[in-house]
Length: 211
Image (tube, rainbow, N blue to C red; front, side):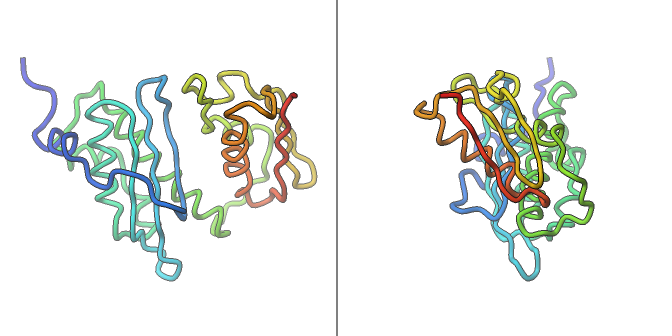
């Protein structure tokens, strides 16, 4: 039986590049869930004048393909402008690694989506989004799928922590089914406000706990 991973995949798995967090990143993205098997968080520092990604790091929970693709994608993105980095594809990452087993192709997709989410986060925070669609409850719930419930490792939508969402006159209201003094309440609140506060037409985010 042929070994499924190339030598380059193994190299990036055993000695991944750009691992860790960036303190006060200009943009960050989180894709996947540890409960589902794979998760990638990407952090970027961007030159405000040239829009070049000057530093990039990642954290990964998952298999060899997940770690290797995140490693190679951060290598590919470093030194590129935001527009150039957006064009990096999962196929390009796979080719750079000498190919991935078909069953593991989703790992390279996950890493690319993490990079794009970090870029989108930066662009939203700096008013660079050109296609400004109104924020709806559907958009809010989609964003909340990227907020993890530390109790389960799944997002707060799938674990039914969100009782209600609404938006009116630029004010988003999110009702969370947790007591305000719960140990994870501050972290969840901060993550919710970060995910929603950068939307172009949102002026304020109110997070309400049930007790």
